[in-house]
Image (cartoon, rainbow, N blue to C red):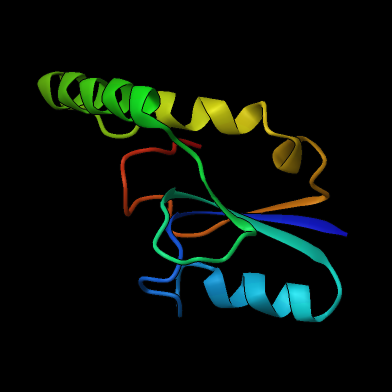
Length: 106
């Protein structure tokens, strides 16, 4: 089974952000990946969601949201994830702490 865990970070706050789940799923034999806004570990199965361009675009969206008094409605940082094969082939997408960073909207 392919599992994708989405979170703001990976190893920082690993008790709550899904990193330990991700490691455990791999130990059980599942194909677990983690897509994060800010990567801190050296785990090859943890991939950053954004690049320099989408980070800049996300920062612009955050400023617009502050101006209009909204929160996590404009989320361009997550768009690259939708085109990644790990997301498109996932059987389960598990979202951890989406409110920690302004990059995700349900």
